[in-house]
Amino acid sequence: MKLKITQFVLLVSLCNLALYHLPFFSYVNVQSGSFALCVVLGLFIFVTNFVFLFPLSFFFPRISKWLVIIFFNINAIAFFYFDSYSVILNKAMIGNIFHTNTTEASSFLSLQLLTTCLIFGVIPSIFFAKINLIPIKKKAFFSQLFLVFFLFISIAYGASTQWIGWLNKNQKMLGGLLLPWSYLVNTPRYLSSEKNQSREQILLPKASIKNNEKSLFVLVIGESSSRANYSLYGYQKDTNPQLAKINNLVAYYAQSCDTYTMAGVKCILEHKKTDKLYEPLPSYLYRSGVEVIWRTVNDGEPYIQTTDYQNQTYLSKICQEKNCGFDEVILSDLQVEINKSGTDKMLLVLHLNPSHGPRYDTKYPQEFEQFTPVCEENDPTVCERQAVVNAYDNTILYTDHILASLIKRLAKIQDRKVAMLYVSDHGESLGEDGVYFHAKDMSIAPKRQYEVPFIVWTSDNARKLKFNYSVKNGLQEDETELSQHNVFHSVLDFLAVDSPVFDREKSVFGERD
Ligand SMILES: [Zn+2]
Image 1 (tube, rainbow, N blue to C red):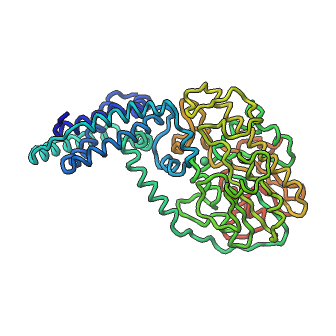
Image 2: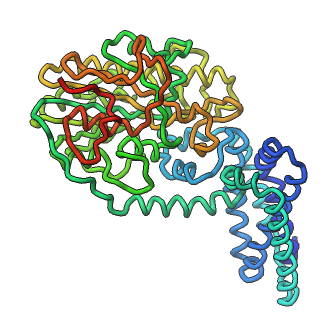
Image 3: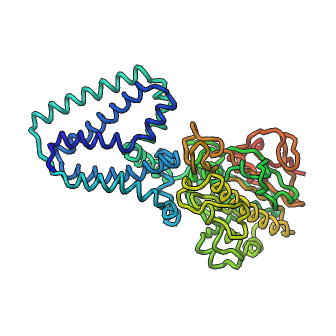
């Protein structure tokens, strides 16, 4: 088929608008209730795409055709996730995509995704590939471009004067649903923030160790764990049968700073909320003379310095546990590791990955499949919601088992005072109001994505926990919320590390004896 450049660009702009923007217009319609705004925004998207694609197609027709094909295929994938899981392509989600490993990525493949890609990506691509572009004259090009650009300015001006408040309030959501602009804008934004991350960290002021009391702090970082699914926090299903029986254990209410791994982990390891890149807790303690062991079956960690960094490959090699293929691998030879330490102060960080979607059912050994039936699909929307929740609850049951096993081992340590703190990087949505997974912008994220478990255990010989509030059955009676920044100060306090940045108020431990 032969088409003039102008016709081609009009057709592409129209198809882009019609094929991929249903989630965008559903959002605008529900949130604003204004049909007129839907029409104006539709026109604006159409005209914006035209204004950018038209010059490209005029000067580089071949390149523009191939770019359209590439964008349409990416759009199709994005559209599937928008439509099925109510996710948006903001900077956080782009970060998640960059940090998804191949196993996680392949677990998202489903028949529905492939069908959507075929209908919304491959078929339009074949159609566009067969089009022969006919050049137009320069004069026609400039006059048409001028006309559409004028339209573009007029619509932008009209919409901003009429709906500026609403547009400002909803700009993150709208930007995250526009295709292809969401990923075209947010990918460079994410990469530039990554570049900033890798720049030199600001060193914290010199710290000193105040005593030679032998102590060990075990920090366990969870993954996608919502406290709403913990029976310790009142969930009706018994997902914490083992932790519930443990003494000296307190479950605090806490919120994560953000809803995706990198931001959550950064927040757990930093001394205050900041956009700057300060030296994270493990590096700071390592530099101050504390032995720091980092064990991980996850990623998304900032650049850290430790005495020893042990990844999944290493842990699998030394594993003699029953379930080496699951997160329990992180407990391999734990006592050996602690016993061989020659220093008084020790920080052990365990970065777990037990509840990451979409295949919650693959994250735990068979014996933890207590809540059934479970969703066994890569696409949770094709399952009954209860089956998705059941599979997720089993991951919490398994987390309960890992934490309880850890505490049982720590309780046997006689020559050190020991504390364990478990906190999740962020929470998880399980299909409530059609929202799945995490990484929603904090301004619009449901509570489930940032209300996280914050559980502390101390050995009998260790300092007691400080309660600013009364505690009943190990759970705060009021709901004063801690933040992930309480971790940094609690660790310093417990290990008796003095520092100008230490904030006693933020420690969960009481006064020293
Ligand atoms: Zn995470």
